[in-house]
Image 1 (cartoon, rainbow over the protein chains, first blue to last red):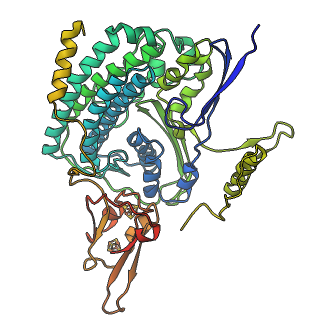
Image 2: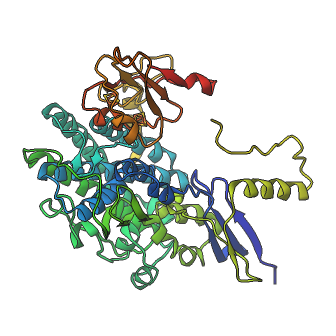
Image 3: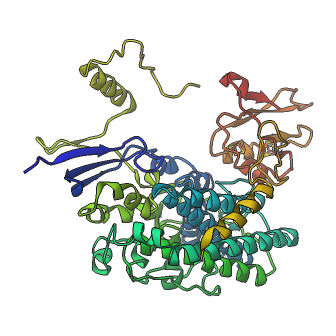
Length: 408
Length: 119
Ligand code: SF4
Ligand code: SF4
């Protein structure tokens, strides 16, 4: 029998433009073993939060993810508001919901394009990214930036929505709805797409529960788990939400769930605009937050996002923990990849809509021989990598190790 | 759905005459919403030197200094826009409206030292 071949996919550009390494063992073209290696993009955000005030932390937390920036800051603000015992005005809750749904629109359109690209359907990438651009313009208009909208603050939101802006949002939402009808039709009836996506990356109902999958990955396996329905936050107690589920339990199912969710988001955005209550957009939150701990869950475009904040009575948090949705979906990845073909690996990875940097939290080295753990600092890591290349005959003579990675 | 070459021809023709979805940059005109959070502006005459902005800046990107005398105060804001994350929290924190944001986003440079500006 032929020997199994081990192929490392990544850490540079493993199907998406973010770092992770998938070690794939092949028997012929079939994947018999897959090891998911994340941890290349640890940024120390949680630790950085402990050194800054709650207000400053919003902007750090917003940068956890480059796509679901709003939902992260919403979750964090909600945790702090819970600790401080304040309730945000209804108008602020509606604006948060509006932003969250606009974010879902752009995130799902982004994913649709990437999925199209992964399966060689680049026209879909061009189409959906063109439409996504309209949504990004709206988000920039409302928040002031295309990615980090910065609309959340402790106790509400920073910017109000004006009647002219509402008109603009309505126009864009109409266009997106019209174009998305085409994508829904495409996902449901285009035979090439169904043949390419159907039956790969299977994660059954039971497996989705076993591996703790969240968001569209679990909903595609008929697990009706949507925090907006099960544990409503912001204005979701009033905004009608339908959790979209599907029974395919594969990449095709995840596609269907996402395109149908775009339709749901469109409805929710209209509801928010129609029923936007009058009133203040923020209440005052004290700088010092009373002692306690809060755990808040929200529904990010990729699934359940959970934040834990512990306060010690000062103006800085004692501990902040972020569990992004992608982190939960990685656990089932090995199972999804095994048994499929090498050519399906990129789209199976992309189908959970992974966000690598949201997942990476800390680098701890486990020494299997001694059982000891160690944490490596920047300088040692740099030295280690230079020596690693030197040992392989690569001339590193010109590289100098700076004393600090901070230039200023 | 999508049957026959007729459908494709229609789609092709529509796109030949449609306005491009992208803009030509840097040659074309850059359209930035007036609400966009770009580089901050500073009005020294309104500033009282309370340093609330410095306290709330998440990126340690600003400092406020009195370059006048104790009696005749003249405030100066030093901004390092290589560190600034354009969150505009300083604008919100200032009670005197001394800091405002502008849609100025063309800030690229080749020397990091040039990015420390006195406003
Ligand atoms: S918060 Fe306003 S008034 Fe106070 S130092 Fe800053 S710019 Fe000046
Ligand atoms: S915009 Fe934000 S990062 Fe920049 S100086 Fe103001 S507070 Fe600091």
